[in-house]
Image 1 (cartoon, rainbow, N blue to C red):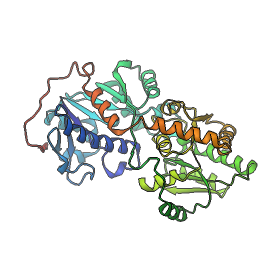
Image 2 (cartoon, one colour; image 1 turned 90 degrees about the vertical axis):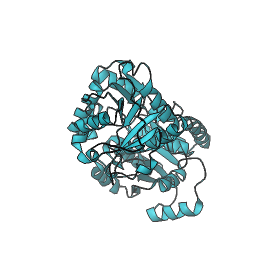
Image 3 (cartoon, rainbow, N blue to C red; image 1 turned 180 degrees about the vertical axis):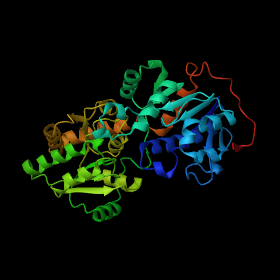
Length: 396
C-alpha cells in the first residue's frame, strides 16, 4: 500500500502552529520506520525551497520524494492538486496531517482532525475562521478515514458531523523527549535565560500560544487574587509563547499587575530550561485536542495543575489537580494548595512523569501507520501500486 504524505504544512508560515510540530515529527518518524520495515511505502511531496524539513536527500526506499511544482500553488493544492499529484505518484491513499484538504480526487484521503475548536468555541474566544470550519466539515464528511488526538475529540467529531465512530481512529501525540525531560536545567544557561527575560525569583509558568482560547485572562485574574491575599508567596507569573488571537487584550490586563512577564516565542531548548525552573505549571485552557504543553511540563518533572475541560483529564490520565477554568477563585485556591504543600508537589511530579512516559512520537507514528493500513480502513482501496522507480519521482 502506497501512502502519499501531504507535506503542505511543512513550511515556515505554519511554524508557530501545533500542526507543524505534528507533521514534522510524523515525517521524521515515518522515515525511521520505513528504514526498519520494508512493507511501509510512503511518498512525500517536495518542491525546491519549499521546506527545510524535507530535503530530497532524505529520500530512500520506502520513503520516496515526489518532486512537484504544484505544492507551491497554495489553495489550489488543497482543493485538488494534491489529489492529482498523489494519483500521478501512484499512491493508494493520501494522508493529510491537517484538515485543509478537499478529498474529491480518485485517491482516497485519510485526514487528521486534531480538534473541533471552531465549532465548540464562539468566535469571540476562538477567532472567526470560516475557512477552517468549511475545510474541516468537508474533510470530516468526505475523507475515507479520520485520525484525531483524543477520545474527547472523537466524541465531538461524531456528534458534530454525525460520523460513524468506526471511521475515526484515536492516536495520541508524542513530545520531544530529548528536549523535554527530567534532567536538571543547566544552572548557568538557566540563570542567563532568566536574566535576559527579566525573571527574578520563583515563578508560575504557562507556555503555549498567548491567545483567548488558552483562558489566560482567568489565569491573570487568579494571579491577582494571589497577589492580594497571599503576598508572602512572592511568585512572578510567566507566560511563554508566541502571540495569537486576543493577545493584545491579555497583555493590557497584565499591565495593571506589573508582575506578569511575556517571553514571546522561545526555541525548544530555552523553553525546556524555563519549564524546568518553574515552581508550578498551570494549564487553564478552555478546549484542547491533546494539550502538548501540559505533557511537556509533566515530562520535565514540574508540578502541574490543569482545567477540568475537554480532553485535559483524559490526556493527563487523571493524575493532576484540576480546577474549574471559569472560576478564578477555584484556580487560585488550587495554585495555593500546591505551592504550600511539598507532599502534593512531589505527588504531582511523580505521577506526571509516569503519565508523560506513555507518549512518544515513535508510538504516534506506529499507531498512525496502523490506522492508515488497517484492513477495515482500506477494504475499498485499490490494489497497491508499489513502484520500482528511482527514489525521486517527478510530478509536474
